[in-house]
Image (cartoon, helix red, strand yellow):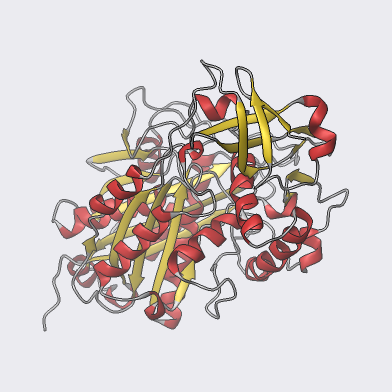
Length: 491
């Protein structure tokens, strides 16, 4: 059977890293893009779209246009994504869809961060001058990740909100924070081994479980139960890029043999604000996106040879594995890079590194790969599937709208304790104790269920911190009071 010339394929990959010199994010994106364009020999002149992943580093309002100018490209479309680690697979899906529809011939997708200075102070790299006053088109969901209820309880930093999810998982497993931390060290140790062999990993060092889970001077508690080595590291200088085109264009350029097919993609969201989620230890949005992508490809999870699960914090891995019916010790492994704590978490761009690595691996070994990405607080999910053989049913984007509505309909009512008093007894459904750089606890936020079923986000009274430290309060009854809500242990 003749193959459709419009099938979208990845034909170029590139990654970059800089440990010593002062660089900007666009320096790193350009280096990765040049490598990808060189890999996709003969297609540079045909790039009609440049898509850039949202950058935390200072790059001005038109990073895609600025990158195109650096590379000597003349695209008709330049766009930048919204915030979120779901953005790379979302942009790849947009590119694949446009190519399959004949709306684009060659698309460059790139991203980078320069958040680590050469003096290791953690200051960002050079500021990129604004080359264009007119901003690039922004694509993606622009909603903020938290609302006033979370903000009133100090729930903004991802490490604190993801720690709430982890507390629910620990309680379900019947573990204390200390016991669960040991399990997390075991879970993430294989990730360090993968990072140790990846040429673009920020921390290419294999570690044993105790190095990840044991609290020490150089591995302090950040937010219970997480230690520093269990958390994503944004202070990196890394870039990645992909070149996508049609099978026909790859044939014409003589690079068909290196093409990896885009099989399918799907997106879904969990209930947008964490306080309104009925179960902090489940992520039905991942289940919907994964089922959609697998179903669109006509395969099951057991037909996948290579996996990369988004891994900003261990619970992201646990939630995805549970949602897809994958064991945490799956023989395929759960990462191709080493994950965000060990490979590096360059802002929103980690998953572009994962896809580039997956493509390189499929080129070498063949097979089918599945990559997940998530944005905000396990909120926005994107799943994509790639293969060395043509997709059984052509490239397809799954329709998840009905399943999305079912997720949204499960939202729990939230007590508006920011404006009105939300007092009463409540059972904790998610809890953490946040620690500062000096290792001292400074806040203990919770999400709890009031007697009428509404959820409330609250923070512990300051004088109660010492009695809460080290305890997983999930299942504990607390007394909530005040505006904004605060709590004390009952009894």
